[in-house]
Amino acid sequence: MNFSSWPALLVADVEGNGTNPPDLVEVAALPVRDGRPDTSTAGAWLIKPLRPVTPFAVGIHGLTNERLADKPGWEEIADEVHGLLGTSWICAHNAHVDYKVLAAHLPTWRPAGVLDTLRLAKATYTGLPKYSLDALIEHVQPDLSAAPAQRHRATFDAYATAQLLIAMAAHYDTWDQLVVAAVPPGLPGAPEPEKDPTLW
Image (tube, rainbow, N blue to C red; front, top):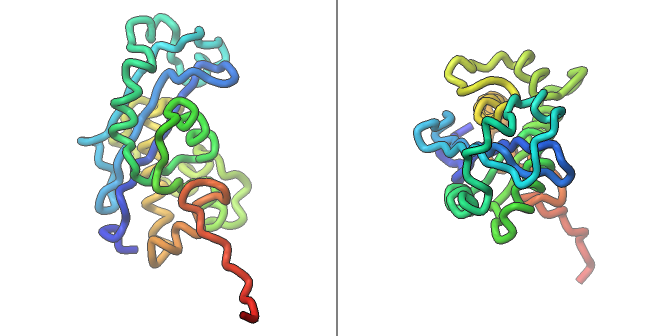
């Protein structure tokens, strides 16, 4: 895989407050450049949600209402998040979820495409019993020594997902092959189905 041929891409991860639909409490966007996560230009935001964080959500990511009390609201940082994402490709694990939540919070944002490491893992590592982020970390054993925070925080999960993407990309010769394997139908960047040939 020639990483220099990749378009601009950021690995995104979001954490919510546990309501449905969720308010965002953390967003991370980590560029991948030349086959490496570029933490020097990454974006990470903690956000005070409109509605309180549920105990269930606190149990997952550890972000309490007290911790978020002095953080900006979404409307204060939305333009900054949108500016970093721009029209780049994004990648996420189980990307439908992160893309849906981000798109709901950024109505005018549309990425060039959306890679899903869950879909990519099923194509790359056939036969695994599970394809959760934890299962893939255990299977691939990426170097997470430089990952910020801890598992279930957006910054850590984005870093781990980036390392998994880079490891799996080595199984593909070209960006186009990666796109075919990794972009779910119906999301931006999905390959067009081939048209049936006609007689005229």
